[in-house]
Amino acid sequence: MSLFDWFANRRKAGPISKERQEREIADGLWSKCSHCGVLTYAKDLRSNALVCPDCGHHNRVGSDERIEQLIDPQTWCSLSDQLRPTDPLEFRDRKSYTDRIQDTQAKTGLNDSVITGVGELHGLPVALGVMDFRFMGGSMGSVVGEKLTRLIEQGTRDRIPVIIVCASGGARMQEGMLSLMQMAKISGALQRHQEAGVLYMPVLSHPTTGGVTASFAMLGDIIIAEPEATIAFAGRRVVEQTLREKLPDDFQTAEYLLNNGFVDMIVPRTQLKKTLAQLIRLHQPIESREHTNHTMPPTSVPVLDRFPLTTHTVD
Image 1 (spheres, rainbow, N blue to C red):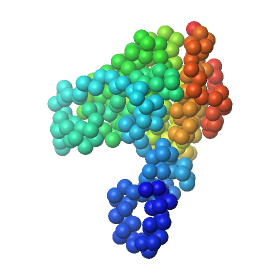
Image 2: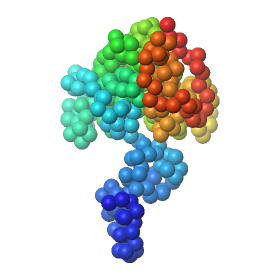
Image 3: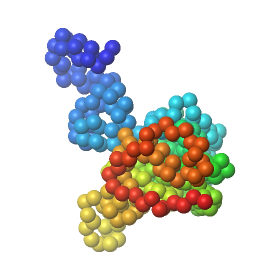
Image 4: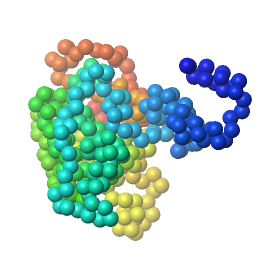
């Protein structure tokens, strides 16, 4: 049944009661934008990459949906699925770390807060890592560090670009120093990737904070952010109390970081796949470009601001 048929049937059925409307929102037929309050048909919202068609607000995206948005159908091959977190420090607060992991795994269907794999993006091979905020706030533990390091090393061996979509509250406190060590491990893998002359692009979504921001999120050849994403290391209150001054209202937003040179470009999610494909083509060696099957017209990609084309050099 088409959307028009659905509305025609609704018109015949008469006015919609408030109770019935609330029930249909709960059932997932409609989605209410948390930013502007406009109701959108859920199917239309998903087809628009979970971006509100009325105000442009970017809703949070799960890892499976993100992979579907970026990777061509039937080309995805996941990596390191067998890795699962353990409790090396036997951490316990109100609830043991082991119990919390098991509960979150059952709730989300994920092993940990990142999914990694290889696939094609507009026909171009890429190594992609996607963090998922639903799993303990996208926190970075030992498994996240290991999976991302293996992904980067795979990209270096195959000489294909690496893309990491960041969404994280930072290092996972339940793993202590073992979690913080992942910052150096991933950064080391990225250094070797850069020395091999292969492209790396992080995509900063809402939120990207803590140890993730302090490591691989800011080490890209081209750093891309989604509109109005929160990107920070320490919390706003901590910074204000430390500096003892009031910060701008847009402090720690993607737009503020763009204006101050911390990110290279802001790209709406609906244009992200197209933009990534264009950037990958621009940074391919000349001999590789001659053999690339161009599936996209060589048109300019609309972005919200500039990016420096000289940020990455390929041998």
